[in-house]
Length: 84
Image 1 (cartoon, rainbow, N blue to C red):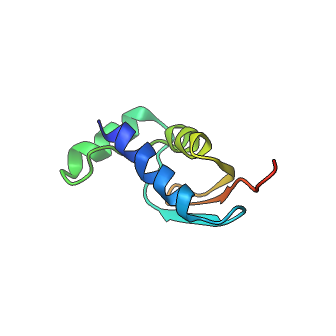
Image 2: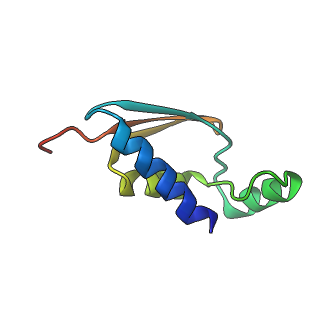
């Protein structure tokens, strides 16, 4: 399932980032599941398009904090610092 693959992918990125490191991502992060499904149908190479809430949940589960979306196309997330 694409959702689990995304968590595994973000988990690996988290392992490779130093504490307090930043992840910058560019993709389409729609607000609704309906918008995400419509975009998935248009592009056969996208197995799953994450909504903002899905992506925030994945990042939080992988130890990222301070997730900030820049419009619908970009985000910046900071990895949790040690000792927090």
